[in-house]
Length: 264
Ligand code: BTN
Image (cartoon, rainbow, N blue to C red; front, side):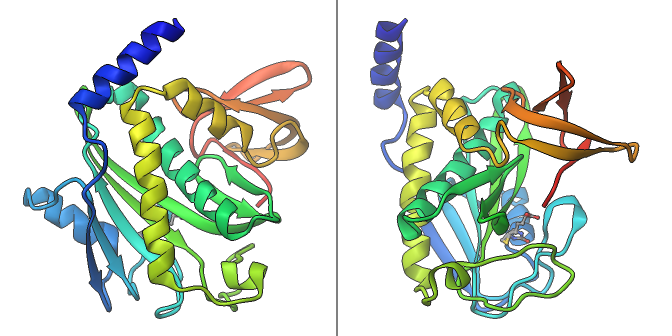
Protein backbone atom coordinates (compact mmCIF):
# COMPACT_ATOMS: atom_id res chain seq x y z
CA UNK A 1 0.00 0.00 0.00
CA UNK A 2 2.78 2.38 1.02
CA UNK A 3 4.70 1.53 -2.16
CA UNK A 4 1.61 2.24 -4.26
CA UNK A 5 1.25 5.62 -2.59
CA UNK A 6 4.91 6.50 -3.32
CA UNK A 7 4.49 5.48 -6.97
CA UNK A 8 1.27 7.51 -7.21
CA UNK A 9 2.88 10.57 -5.60
CA UNK A 10 5.85 10.31 -7.99
CA UNK A 11 3.50 9.91 -10.96
CA UNK A 12 1.27 12.78 -9.94
CA UNK A 13 4.19 15.15 -9.40
CA UNK A 14 5.12 14.53 -13.02
CA UNK A 15 1.66 15.37 -14.26
CA UNK A 16 0.56 18.13 -11.93
CA UNK A 17 2.30 21.45 -11.29
CA UNK A 18 4.83 21.80 -8.47
CA UNK A 19 3.56 25.21 -7.49
CA UNK A 20 0.49 27.37 -7.92
CA UNK A 21 1.28 30.44 -10.02
CA UNK A 22 -0.23 33.14 -7.85
CA UNK A 23 -1.48 36.33 -9.46
CA UNK A 24 -2.40 38.85 -6.76
CA UNK A 25 -4.77 41.73 -7.56
CA UNK A 26 -5.29 44.21 -4.75
CA UNK A 27 -8.23 46.63 -4.54
CA UNK A 28 -8.80 49.43 -2.04
CA UNK A 29 -12.48 48.60 -1.91
CA UNK A 30 -14.80 45.91 -3.26
CA UNK A 31 -18.27 44.79 -2.20
CA UNK A 32 -16.94 41.25 -1.73
CA UNK A 33 -13.84 39.54 -3.10
CA UNK A 34 -15.80 36.29 -3.49
CA UNK A 35 -18.47 38.04 -5.59
CA UNK A 36 -15.81 39.73 -7.70
CA UNK A 37 -14.06 36.43 -8.40
CA UNK A 38 -17.38 34.68 -9.05
CA UNK A 39 -18.08 37.18 -11.83
CA UNK A 40 -14.61 36.62 -13.26
CA UNK A 41 -15.02 32.84 -13.24
CA UNK A 42 -18.44 33.18 -14.88
CA UNK A 43 -16.73 35.15 -17.66
CA UNK A 44 -13.98 32.52 -17.92
CA UNK A 45 -11.44 35.12 -16.77
CA UNK A 46 -10.23 33.54 -13.53
CA UNK A 47 -7.17 31.32 -13.82
CA UNK A 48 -6.00 28.99 -11.09
CA UNK A 49 -3.86 31.02 -8.70
CA UNK A 50 -5.79 34.26 -9.03
CA UNK A 51 -5.88 36.00 -5.65
CA UNK A 52 -8.18 38.98 -5.25
CA UNK A 53 -7.49 41.05 -2.18
CA UNK A 54 -9.58 43.94 -0.87
CA UNK A 55 -8.41 46.36 1.78
CA UNK A 56 -12.06 46.97 2.57
CA UNK A 57 -15.29 45.14 1.70
CA UNK A 58 -18.62 46.95 1.78
CA UNK A 59 -20.62 43.68 1.56
CA UNK A 60 -18.26 41.05 2.91
CA UNK A 61 -19.94 37.66 2.91
CA UNK A 62 -19.77 35.18 5.76
CA UNK A 63 -21.24 31.71 6.19
CA UNK A 64 -25.03 31.35 6.22
CA UNK A 65 -25.61 34.72 4.56
CA UNK A 66 -23.97 36.55 7.45
CA UNK A 67 -22.06 39.77 6.91
CA UNK A 68 -18.26 39.57 7.33
CA UNK A 69 -17.16 42.58 9.38
CA UNK A 70 -13.74 44.08 8.88
CA UNK A 71 -12.51 47.63 9.46
CA UNK A 72 -10.67 49.32 6.60
CA UNK A 73 -7.10 48.11 6.02
CA UNK A 74 -7.01 46.16 9.27
CA UNK A 75 -7.41 42.56 8.15
CA UNK A 76 -6.66 40.10 5.40
CA UNK A 77 -9.58 39.68 3.00
CA UNK A 78 -8.91 37.51 -0.04
CA UNK A 79 -10.43 35.09 -2.50
CA UNK A 80 -8.22 32.49 -4.13
CA UNK A 81 -9.12 30.48 -7.23
CA UNK A 82 -8.20 26.80 -7.49
CA UNK A 83 -9.12 24.41 -10.27
CA UNK A 84 -8.52 20.97 -8.77
CA UNK A 85 -10.01 19.22 -11.79
CA UNK A 86 -8.94 15.72 -10.78
CA UNK A 87 -10.57 15.79 -7.30
CA UNK A 88 -13.81 13.77 -7.43
CA UNK A 89 -16.86 15.79 -6.39
CA UNK A 90 -17.47 13.48 -3.40
CA UNK A 91 -14.05 14.48 -2.02
CA UNK A 92 -14.73 18.21 -2.26
CA UNK A 93 -14.49 18.63 1.53
CA UNK A 94 -10.73 18.17 1.09
CA UNK A 95 -10.66 21.73 -0.29
CA UNK A 96 -12.09 23.05 2.99
CA UNK A 97 -9.64 20.89 4.89
CA UNK A 98 -6.52 22.08 3.08
CA UNK A 99 -7.64 25.70 3.40
CA UNK A 100 -8.23 25.37 7.13
CA UNK A 101 -4.91 23.55 7.53
CA UNK A 102 -3.06 26.27 5.57
CA UNK A 103 -4.43 28.87 7.96
CA UNK A 104 -3.58 26.67 10.92
CA UNK A 105 0.00 26.34 9.59
CA UNK A 106 0.26 30.12 9.23
CA UNK A 107 -1.15 30.81 12.69
CA UNK A 108 1.12 28.20 14.21
CA UNK A 109 4.12 30.13 12.80
CA UNK A 110 2.81 33.53 13.89
CA UNK A 111 1.58 32.47 17.33
CA UNK A 112 3.94 29.63 18.31
CA UNK A 113 2.76 29.62 21.93
CA UNK A 114 -0.90 29.16 21.07
CA UNK A 115 -3.01 26.11 20.30
CA UNK A 116 -4.73 26.71 16.98
CA UNK A 117 -7.94 24.76 16.45
CA UNK A 118 -10.32 24.24 13.55
CA UNK A 119 -13.93 24.63 14.54
CA UNK A 120 -15.93 22.42 12.21
CA UNK A 121 -16.35 22.94 9.39
CA UNK A 122 -13.68 25.57 8.86
CA UNK A 123 -13.40 28.40 11.37
CA UNK A 124 -10.01 29.00 12.94
CA UNK A 125 -10.05 29.31 16.71
CA UNK A 126 -7.46 30.42 19.23
CA UNK A 127 -8.22 30.58 22.97
CA UNK A 128 -11.90 29.76 22.29
CA UNK A 129 -12.24 32.74 19.95
CA UNK A 130 -12.62 33.02 16.19
CA UNK A 131 -9.66 34.52 14.38
CA UNK A 132 -10.47 33.52 10.79
CA UNK A 133 -13.34 32.33 8.64
CA UNK A 134 -13.51 30.60 5.29
CA UNK A 135 -16.24 30.79 2.67
CA UNK A 136 -15.81 28.38 -0.22
CA UNK A 137 -17.93 28.38 -3.34
CA UNK A 138 -17.40 25.30 -5.49
CA UNK A 139 -18.38 24.62 -9.05
CA UNK A 140 -18.80 20.84 -9.33
CA UNK A 141 -19.56 18.29 -12.01
CA UNK A 142 -18.17 14.78 -11.48
CA UNK A 143 -15.02 16.56 -10.39
CA UNK A 144 -14.26 19.88 -8.75
CA UNK A 145 -14.12 22.40 -11.59
CA UNK A 146 -13.48 25.62 -9.69
CA UNK A 147 -13.15 26.54 -6.04
CA UNK A 148 -13.43 30.14 -4.95
CA UNK A 149 -11.81 30.18 -1.54
CA UNK A 150 -12.69 33.26 0.49
CA UNK A 151 -10.58 33.87 3.56
CA UNK A 152 -11.04 36.52 6.22
CA UNK A 153 -8.24 36.63 8.78
CA UNK A 154 -8.40 39.16 11.61
CA UNK A 155 -4.97 40.76 11.75
CA UNK A 156 -4.69 44.23 13.29
CA UNK A 157 -8.25 45.02 14.34
CA UNK A 158 -8.62 45.43 18.09
CA UNK A 159 -12.29 46.30 18.52
CA UNK A 160 -15.10 44.38 16.83
CA UNK A 161 -18.85 45.01 16.57
CA UNK A 162 -20.70 43.68 19.60
CA UNK A 163 -22.94 41.51 17.39
CA UNK A 164 -20.00 39.15 16.89
CA UNK A 165 -20.00 36.51 19.64
CA UNK A 166 -16.29 35.89 20.09
CA UNK A 167 -13.88 37.56 17.67
CA UNK A 168 -10.16 37.84 18.15
CA UNK A 169 -7.20 38.94 16.03
CA UNK A 170 -3.45 38.49 15.75
CA UNK A 171 -3.03 41.96 17.25
CA UNK A 172 -5.15 41.09 20.29
CA UNK A 173 -3.36 37.78 20.86
CA UNK A 174 0.23 38.81 20.16
CA UNK A 175 0.06 42.41 21.37
CA UNK A 176 1.84 43.72 18.26
CA UNK A 177 0.79 44.77 14.76
CA UNK A 178 1.50 42.69 11.67
CA UNK A 179 2.24 43.52 8.03
CA UNK A 180 -0.75 42.26 6.04
CA UNK A 181 1.25 41.84 2.80
CA UNK A 182 3.78 39.60 4.58
CA UNK A 183 0.97 37.56 6.06
CA UNK A 184 -0.62 37.15 2.65
CA UNK A 185 2.65 35.93 1.12
CA UNK A 186 3.21 33.41 3.91
CA UNK A 187 -0.39 32.22 3.73
CA UNK A 188 -0.07 31.64 -0.02
CA UNK A 189 3.08 29.57 0.58
CA UNK A 190 1.14 27.48 3.09
CA UNK A 191 -1.78 27.09 0.65
CA UNK A 192 0.67 25.99 -2.01
CA UNK A 193 2.22 23.35 0.28
CA UNK A 194 -1.15 21.95 1.27
CA UNK A 195 -2.41 22.00 -2.33
CA UNK A 196 0.64 20.03 -3.44
CA UNK A 197 -0.16 17.46 -0.74
CA UNK A 198 -3.64 17.22 -2.18
CA UNK A 199 -2.40 16.89 -5.76
CA UNK A 200 0.06 14.26 -4.53
CA UNK A 201 -2.90 12.20 -3.33
CA UNK A 202 -2.20 12.48 0.41
CA UNK A 203 -5.91 12.50 1.20
CA UNK A 204 -5.65 10.40 4.36
CA UNK A 205 -2.86 12.51 5.79
CA UNK A 206 -4.88 15.69 5.21
CA UNK A 207 -7.96 14.15 6.85
CA UNK A 208 -6.00 12.90 9.83
CA UNK A 209 -4.29 16.25 10.40
CA UNK A 210 -7.59 18.07 10.11
CA UNK A 211 -9.25 15.73 12.61
CA UNK A 212 -6.33 16.02 15.02
CA UNK A 213 -6.79 19.76 15.46
CA UNK A 214 -10.58 19.92 15.70
CA UNK A 215 -11.91 22.38 18.25
CA UNK A 216 -13.43 20.50 21.25
CA UNK A 217 -12.20 17.13 19.99
CA UNK A 218 -12.80 14.45 22.64
CA UNK A 219 -14.12 17.03 25.12
CA UNK A 220 -17.65 16.92 26.55
CA UNK A 221 -19.75 19.83 25.34
CA UNK A 222 -23.36 20.94 24.94
CA UNK A 223 -24.73 20.89 21.39
CA UNK A 224 -27.91 22.25 19.88
CA UNK A 225 -29.86 20.34 17.23
CA UNK A 226 -31.68 22.08 14.39
CA UNK A 227 -34.99 21.24 16.12
CA UNK A 228 -33.88 23.38 19.11
CA UNK A 229 -33.12 20.46 21.47
CA UNK A 230 -29.78 20.48 23.23
CA UNK A 231 -27.74 17.42 24.17
CA UNK A 232 -24.43 16.54 25.76
CA UNK A 233 -21.87 14.89 23.55
CA UNK A 234 -18.27 14.58 22.47
CA UNK A 235 -16.87 15.35 19.02
CA UNK A 236 -15.05 12.28 17.72
CA UNK A 237 -14.16 13.15 14.11
CA UNK A 238 -15.26 14.54 10.76
CA UNK A 239 -16.01 12.03 8.01
CA UNK A 240 -14.62 12.17 4.49
CA UNK A 241 -17.79 13.88 3.25
CA UNK A 242 -17.50 16.55 5.95
CA UNK A 243 -20.09 15.31 8.44
CA UNK A 244 -19.41 15.88 12.14
CA UNK A 245 -19.52 12.74 14.29
CA UNK A 246 -20.67 13.36 17.86
CA UNK A 247 -20.85 10.60 20.46
CA UNK A 248 -23.71 10.93 22.90
CA UNK A 249 -24.77 8.34 25.49
CA UNK A 250 -22.81 5.62 23.74
CA UNK A 251 -24.28 6.31 20.27
CA UNK A 252 -22.59 8.03 17.33
CA UNK A 253 -24.51 10.67 15.37
CA UNK A 254 -23.52 12.27 12.05
CA UNK A 255 -24.43 15.90 11.44
CA UNK A 256 -24.26 17.83 8.21
CA UNK A 257 -23.42 21.51 8.00
CA UNK A 258 -26.09 23.60 9.78
CA UNK A 259 -27.70 20.55 11.42
CA UNK A 260 -26.00 21.20 14.74
CA UNK A 261 -24.59 24.16 16.60
CA UNK A 262 -22.08 24.10 19.37
CA UNK A 263 -20.53 26.59 21.79
CA UNK A 264 -18.85 29.47 19.99
C1 BTN B 1 -17.34 32.91 7.87
O1 BTN B 1 -18.50 33.29 8.03
O2 BTN B 1 -16.70 32.43 8.79
C2 BTN B 1 -16.69 33.02 6.51
C3 BTN B 1 -16.07 34.36 6.33
C4 BTN B 1 -15.37 34.55 5.01
C5 BTN B 1 -14.98 36.00 4.82
C6 BTN B 1 -14.12 36.21 3.61
S1 BTN B 1 -13.42 37.82 3.56
C7 BTN B 1 -12.86 37.56 1.95
C8 BTN B 1 -13.93 36.77 1.22
N1 BTN B 1 -14.89 37.66 0.61
C9 BTN B 1 -16.08 37.60 1.19
O3 BTN B 1 -17.06 38.31 0.89
N2 BTN B 1 -16.06 36.69 2.16
C10 BTN B 1 -14.78 36.03 2.26
